[in-house]
Structure formats: C-alpha cells, structure tokens
Image (tube, rainbow, N blue to C red):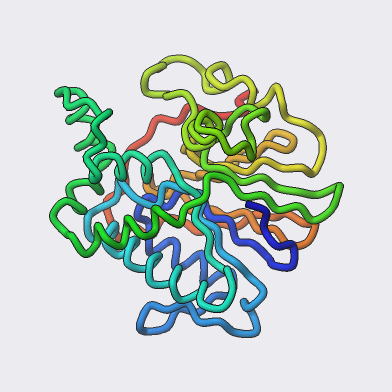
Length: 276
C-alpha cells in the first residue's frame, strides 16, 4: 500500500511486548496518552501517523503482552476513526501465533515444534486461555499489511517491511513475495554463519541513494545502516532500546528510548548485520 505523502511517519521497530517503552517513545514524539490509555490528537501530533514494523507480540511477560495488545487495539480503532493514522505491518511472530491459534493443519505437532511454540511464541498460551484477548489479536492481524511504501518524490522514498528481502520481492503481492517480506532465512538454524553471509542481498543490493528499505526482524544492538538499507530492530526486549525511524517530507531521522526494566529482559548473542 502507498502511504499519503502529507503525513509525518513514526516507524517503530519490533516491540515484543515492550509497552512501557512504546508509550515513552510515543510521548517523545509529541503524543499524549491520557488516563484512559487513549492517544490524544493535538496540534503537535495531528499531522503524525504511527507505523508498527511487525512483531509486537511474544517474548515478553504475559502481563506486558496483554497490555500491548489492548493498547494497540484501543488506539488503532481510536486513531483511525476519521483518517488513517495507525498502520500495522505483519511480522513472522504475528503470522506464527495466528497459525497456532487458528489450528493451521500444516503446522506439525512434533516435540520440537511444541518446544518452539513454548519457547518463541508464548503469546499462544496467553490467547488460548483468554478469548477476549484472542479476539482483539485476530482483529489486529486482519488489519496488517505486508508492505507499505512512502514516495515523496523521484529522489526520496521508503519501502517498509518486517524482514529484509531481495529487491525483486519488494512490494510484490504474491505468496512467495509475502513470505520473503515477513521472514528471512533463520539464524537459529544456521548458527555460526555471519548474518551478512546468510542474507548477502542486504548489502549487495544496497545503493547510495535515498530510496530506503527500512525493516526490523533482525535484533541488533543498535540501528544498522548500509547505504539505503536500514534495520531498526534494536532489541528492546533484550534490554537495549526501542527505536523508530521518522520520515517527514524528504527527510529521515531516528530516535530511541532505553529499556525501562519493568519486566525481565531476554538474553541475546548478536549476529551483527553489515559487520564489515
């Protein structure tokens, strides 16, 4: 989907239930959240829109996952009443949780798969015992885009996906392209291999221009940029930062907030992207 070019976009990396950090980041960008949890429109933010780059669930505590789903659903409905101001991109975690809770027959029920479900997709257990929250999640899932594109002029644009993928798949509406934009090759299945060797297209296709490809998915200790390729998943749930890219007209900048220690953080051994 093409985004209107008359808005400023706050593009937020992988939340993974870091709701306190998300609220702090929004406040830093001029959004006020009232006592009922609604993001209020005012003169400072009425021209701004929010985009979540996927993976807003899993890995966090059940308390924080509950708060995250409720807050996103509440404000997705609230901010989109009169015009579209809150966008969601589907991540691989949303996709896998959806497959589990809808009993996708193509999912194997092997011991390894069940172990992965418990270890990596802990939102499933939460939704299986909370029908109200499951309904909210399913409604949000149906609203997710696979890709979004902002094109200000012939010199400046940004394509947004959850995962990095070869350029030939970007903005293509096929099953294969959708799969590539949601998830790239698994790092856990290729341990010991440098990320730049696993997904060489990320740097091989990079160009010195302002037609950016912004993505998350690959948890990193900081924003990683090589030419026009940018990863903004800065590992909030692993105790680092929650980051965003901010696009306004033909400008791009970044901002972040640190992990707030209001839940237990995970641990991560980083496989660096653009580690030249």
